[in-house]
Image 1 (cartoon, rainbow, N blue to C red):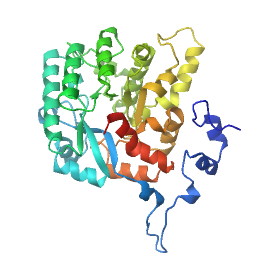
Image 2 (image 1 turned 90 degrees about the vertical axis):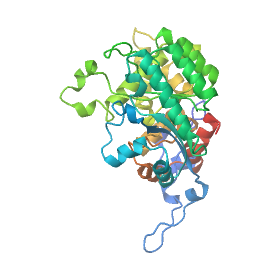
Image 3 (image 1 turned 30 degrees about the vertical axis):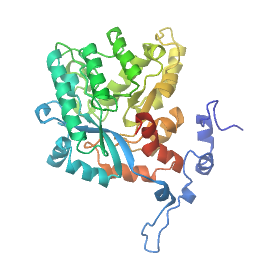
Image 4 (image 1 turned 120 degrees about the horizontal axis):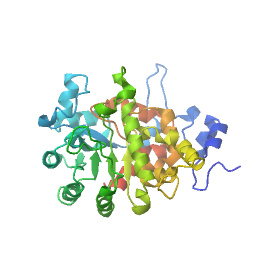
Length: 372
């Protein structure tokens, strides 16, 4: 019986039918009975096979803040130490990278950043200031730190110019944008599937850099579903809702039919999309309302998206992501300083996946994607 589909990925039916030992034999997960962990009689963990192949990780959803933009980012950090780390791009950050076995971090302006500045000229100014500040600090530790551009998508042409400058002049690795943009008034929410953004996406494809779509809080005018439960609106749930809807809008608009080489990154193990994508396509196929896209949404998720482990250290969820899109499109991340580098490291180093997939996710996929 074949255990894989036509693209060589293990199927969901096979996953459910196989035991954990059978899965280990396919190479998808490690065999718990041969985990290679050695302990002495006192229970002290010694070396493992994974240790022998493990190398420093690359993380790419790691945030910083500008002191003057503190009103826009970092409010959710619970302790003074976390807030200090948010604004530090020097010794404290490098020390935490060492604690988390991180060789390289690609840094980005914390949410909602530029996207929450309705005044277009001020958004352009903030993006340039943030990018120059980041470039200056990356230059101090170029082997350890890289940058994602903050973009003023309030003005698509200005965003093209700033992305081009950041990639060609500052050596940035791509862009990270914090969800929809507010334009001209604080109650607006503009998404990037709209026609005025097609020239921007053409430039992203031409530059051959990834675009990281990061969450942000829903606007106050769209908080009715969360009324009485403010904890729901942010990172526990609302972030994933906002970002997964935005990603589906991009897919459904036909964007990837026009620009098939676009590379979009989603954090937090895909904002729920890997788990729900089959039902999305199934219900579309049985309904009367169809998107403009030519192909199923799952096709675009597999071919145009990469997914990171940022802030979602759940083994079962990682397995689902690998089943849906393949280990070659999964990337390690922490979500620092909102998450702890050691917690992320300890989870990932022990998660039941093959050593080859562990190396891919930890660093080699990112090396290939970002030419590191």
